Length: 482
Image 1 (tube, rainbow, N blue to C red):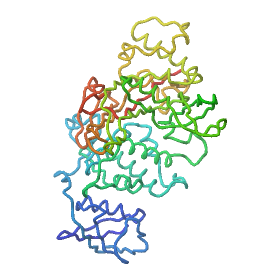
Image 2 (cartoon, one colour; image 1 turned 135 degrees about the vertical axis):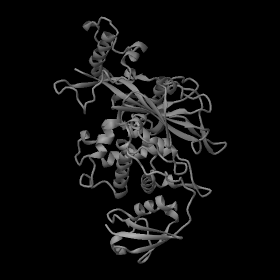
Image 3 (cartoon, rainbow, N blue to C red; image 1 turned 90 degrees about the vertical axis):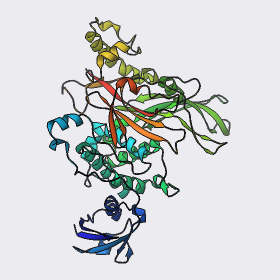
Image 4 (cartoon, rainbow, N blue to C red; image 1 turned 30 degrees about the vertical axis):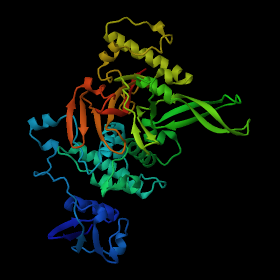
């Protein structure tokens, strides 16, 4: 890899190493860190004219020690820390204890809190981090384009840097590649990058990772992201006008919590989200008709994501508006009654086993004959409290506590992350991530400022005013060994 020097204004940066296997925009991102000049303003003179973001290094013919000239005006950027970055393992024991239990924050690069909060929530999924750590160019599928590959690598590198660093991390390269893959995140207003929708960022990033991390086979088992986040829905469509009925299946990465004047709790909103109306052509009527669509969950993910549908388009003002209504959500979510009949039958025995285990902790007698009769009874507050973080009775299938016992889902989930929005519009306001650590403690990631929170304060992020309110919640499945 050649080393070059770059002259910008009165400054000369020597010994900058260029990885010619990566596109020039990665090099520009590095120069942004050094100079504060955004890549779109950088004018770098090379052979053949100006250096393009997607230029071909081989055609440019860089030489070792070559001097490059860059022009461009810097933004006012966050100053680098006066002291060099110190890794956690190099800190004194007292300092290590202070920082133990949660990773670093992310620098806001200018209305990038939507991206920072998304990254912090998804980074809390250890199975996703494991899948990313195993990703390489050699494992890349032929169906994965260059920018998807780059975004996957940038995600892996950013996750790793957050885990290693004590100080706030600047996600410059990740942000550059995200905008390269999804140009909508490059929108400008008055010369500044606009605030974007965190749910859109979450969805697009997961979609990219689902393509990149999919093994080159046709088996669904090879789809790591679908196994972690995918929810299979079985839907019944009924036309009231003609009496026609049909069914369909689909896979989604999140459930929707629809909010109306009737919805006061997440569970009610989920029920509303699984039932709705749509227009489609009726073969019997020979024209478009209204169908009622009712869906049930047919398979469960390890991490259940719920989006609170708070934003809608307000025609009279021609802008996005926000529903501020308070919608409570639990620390422990039971979705048994939202599942299909086939799935309920599979869940009955594991749920009974889980209740028996929780009953023993409370000193209650258990009965093997209780069976499936009460299998749709939700866990009581006492049971949830006895289980604490919910992990004492769960076994991660990948980590496996016993090779002789199989692990089974129960339909019961524990809250592990909340992404909140504060403000009146999706195009403004502020996003923050609230993430549960392996220790059971909750950390608020407000860009570059992580802070510890009390568990009882997490469920207060339910809306009803101008405070932070839940926009996306992520729950982790409880498993039992049988």
